[in-house]
Image (cartoon, rainbow, N blue to C red):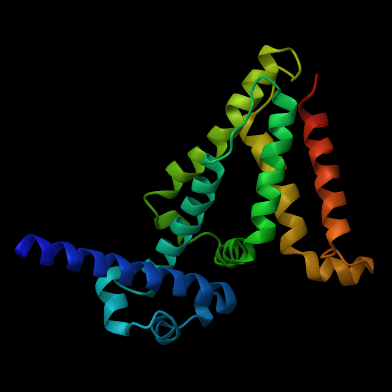
Length: 212
């Protein structure tokens, strides 16, 4: 019986922490780190301020956990990709499409990254886990490039990090600046066809940058 009670308490604790984390993602993505308040988060999580301080310590540590959470969620989704390394070019197109679609479907990811960049990365620098999470993301690209090199399709002098930055930036910038660029260019960059055209363009561009 004590074991069962302990197990129930552990499940309740995990559920509470999960609800707080999800609420924090919502609040911080809308209000930023500075504008997001603990009271807002606890209310949205159907919890209380005391639980947030108990499980996360303070607002800054909670925000760090939020950043780790969104990167981990990205990696988990990316790990589900089934890439055919026998066709490296198609595998690269698939990876570019995944990153693009993830940014489109998870605007909170884009917003939270923009918020942290406004703070000059002060929170990610305190994380003990983000370096490993970043390595996982870049690691998905490495076997694609190595397979392309082995087949003589891709250049031998490719820098993996530069390639990842190229793909990530092409996907990120469009989404992070969609509203201002739509006004500036007088086009609706949120339109389905506009997004499809951009994905096709950046997929070709990424391949051109890697081909021999």
